[in-house]
Amino acid sequence: MLNLVQSQKQTLKISPAQIQLLNFLQLNTLELEQHIKNELEENPLLEEGNEESDDNFGDDFNTPTKAEDRTQDYMDWDEFKDDDMPDYRTRINNYSDDDTNYTPLVVEAVTWRQELKEQFHLLPLNERQQILADFVIDSLTDEGYLNYTAEALADDVSFTSGIFVEETEVKEIVEILRKMDPAGLGARDLQDCLLLQLERRSDKEAELATLIIKKYFDELAARNYEKLMRACGISSEELKEVIALIASLNPQPVMGSQIDSFVIKDNIVPDYIVRVDGDLIEVELNNRRIPPLRVNKSYAQEVGGTRAANTYVNSKLNAANWLIDAIQQRENTMLKSMRAIVKLQEEYFRTGDVRKLRPMVLRDVAERIQMDVSTVSRVTSGKYAQTPFGVIHLKDLFTEGIVTQSGEEVSNRQIQLALVELVSQEDKQSPLNDFQLAEMLSEKGYSVARRTVAKYREQMDIPTASLRRIL
Image (cartoon, rainbow, N blue to C red; front, side):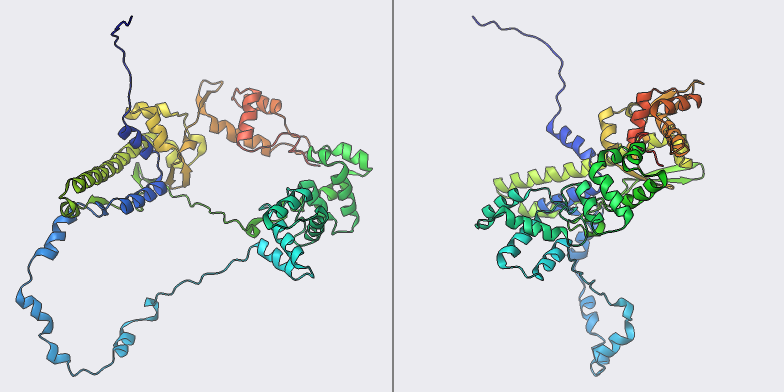
């Protein structure tokens, strides 16, 4: 038997348009620029320009021209009809060399893989070996390491090329590769890479470094210098020379510009611009890359007619109006949030001193502008601001607060700076561990636990005490 039960409950439903607007707030300047370009290509009713220019646009083309104006261009024809001066004379006299636009030259870059293949092609190898050499070079990582065994390479090249290849054939090519420049090509790991570089040296320090890397690589990585001196029977001065030699070796066979994969370094385009002028701090959006948008109403009137055309025009018209409104709402929300951040961190923006940062979380900004925390997170995540002291990441401004022994609340960034100062002043032969660092911070008034010190140390990429130790 079915029972009908009526109940009342409160739910929160977000419309698709609201979800789209929230995602729109998260776009940075470059992403918004690309989004607008895509919309301009897909929506024929959307175009660049201000709405105010529509009135003048029609006047320029629709206003009839008087007959006197049309014939004005030809009134002085008799004055110039007998002028036989060639055009190039006037062009030379009226234009300078600076007005010439030159097309920049396109430089062809040769990658290190191509150079390696050319080296192999100069060797007395047959066609089969050339195919194997090209395959092995393409199997190297961007750093020049070879992570595959000869057996696996033989199976892969047999499958792709349709020829049966023995494992010994691949090993011969790999051995030739390991003797080429730069030293370390074809290495299996870091230990093998260092040994390949040391093989090309014949001095005493290289022999001792080879012994240490072969037999005591783990002790070297852990900086257990006493065990290394006992095992090798050497003094601390000799060990210093060997460690200096090992430190001069390349950890990667191919480094820097030799990498053939195009690494695109995104130039940071700030989303906000903060200017300090005396007692006044101004905040504005970096909208120089964002073009003004408007709706092409004349196109909408021309296309309209049939039912299908009206449906299409209405959908594109709604999308264009939504985008224009969304951009305006995004600008208002971002400005309101950034002004609140500047107000909360006024001392920092005036001085640029990190120690002036106040403890601040997203909720502090959300309460000040009366918006949701998620909205503030979207307009600050992945956003940068241009300030008088450089470009800063907005997420770096949000820090937790810690109460000192004097009762003052300070930012954790201030404690991190104090930690960096302690590490920089420590005795490198006997570095401070996390317990000692926590005690010294406590003497400065910062009561933090050892695990907090370890967390801050990892965030700032400071190695442990054993790895900071030197002879």
